[in-house]
Image (cartoon, rainbow, N blue to C red; front, side, top):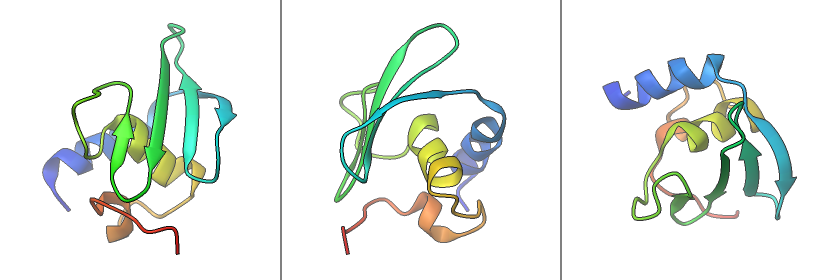
Length: 86
């Protein structure tokens, strides 16, 4: 597991995000305790509104993988860089 992903998994396990909506099976809108909103999409590339130019994992996408999809944190699917609908 990449060290940066391990750090994000640790933070994702303790952060509180509120699910505001789901725009399909792999697209979510969250807000944090400071009312900042984030849109996360996980598909052939990973997108999050926290860093629009970035196409890889962030805290919010790791949160989706581990807390919403309930994938164990040691499973390589958590840090895989892209996904297919199938």
